[in-house]
Image 1 (cartoon, chains in turn yellow, cyan):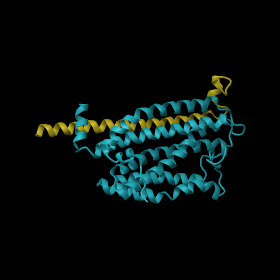
Image 2 (image 1 turned 90 degrees about the vertical axis):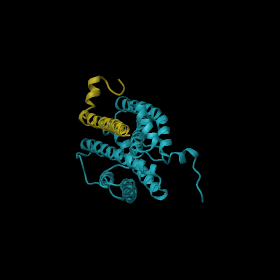
Image 3 (image 1 turned 180 degrees about the vertical axis):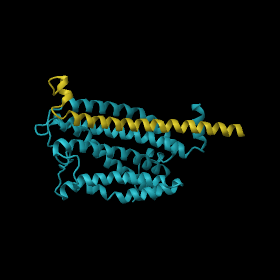
Image 4 (image 1 turned 180 degrees about the horizontal axis):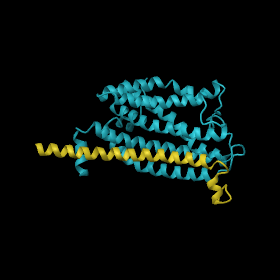
Length: 60
Length: 250
């Protein structure tokens, strides 16, 4: 497969498996953090805004 | 001299127009980011040839170089948006600057951490107080400082102005990062990509890198637009169009 002889070879990355997978894992983690924090902020805004609007409507 | 921008550029200053316009762009940028990053990662991890000196640890550059480039571009974008907001008093420019700061801090962490992980097998140390590395660390502190300064103000307008000024002062760090490898005797190698020269790597190595850089920029666009959209809604929550939008979601 590609530049490697076998899947075990691919996982081991010569003797640099730990470093390579740690880097890529961290990159994915930071991508994921950004996606989740953006989605959470959006949800939080809408749930808060909905409650506030309902309150305003019951008052008037 | 009067500079004329295309019509859509002026319309972006309107919060409502920005919200609708980015709503249309977002799915396309999301698809592009997902495809480019998946292809780039698989290509870089599995198909790019091994480096004859560094072995497989060189594959870290496919996440390190794009994140380092983007951490700096994102800073320039933030400072420019801050300047536009200060000079022309455009609310949307400050929204963009604030959204860029949060993303920039996370991507600067990625550049620093992947660099450290690469340094261990290559230089034998996680960290050295090299000019390039130190300047990158300063960039991260600038992002953190700008975020902290913004949250220290009760009033959004004062917060926007203060963080824009800090962002502009911090721009001095960008040329220092860029030329650090030339001005001082650093351990860090010079740039992998130069606009004026052919890359020193073979195409099998730099092509996946180019795909990753493009993917990172698309991802930046996606996160920036999404963050800015929520920020716009929060700031404009008293206006009728936001209220209508919220009511539709119920």
